[in-house]
Image (cartoon, rainbow, N blue to C red; front, side, top):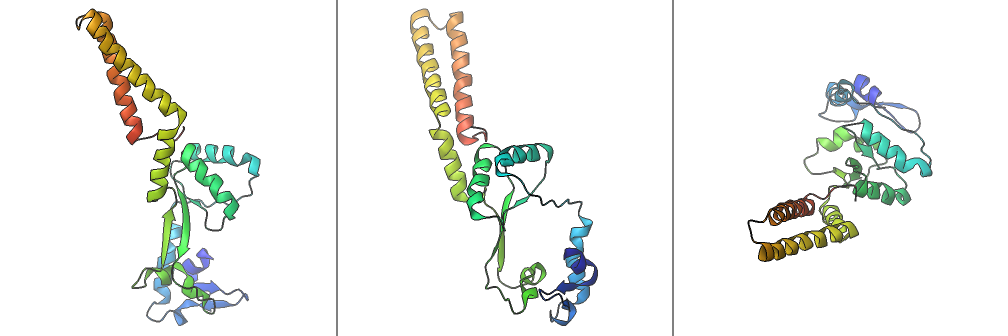
Length: 206
């Protein structure tokens, strides 16, 4: 479909008939339609679509993001029962590009080519959004809350408090010039900085 649009400015109707968009787009010429979609052919992008067994999904995604620095996982057509699984992988396994296409305007099924991206894109008002569901405000807040409430963070917090208390106790007992006190103070400072860092920049693998 994209190749046909990019090279000929034509749309395949569901009845199999070719629709020349030059006759349907008003001020948008056939050349402008082709130029818009030709960007996809110029970009060095690989498209993949394959069946994945549910039991292999997590390992597949982990391997995929390990081997690909830049990627987009499109979940627009995904069955909703699996959306929670991929969102969870975004929370704990470092998945970042989980995008969905949201058509804001009412779909025109009598003229389906009016739902194509080039027509939506040139509209004077917002007709669609392409959103990374792992970068929404609520998801970011919740992912941070999950980290803060996780047992590992609680253990780290109590460990920091213990080091600080130990440092204060040794300073009072041995004096500030004691080598033991100095090392405990250094460790306490590193532990405190590490805890603060993890609060503001929580790691994906919890």
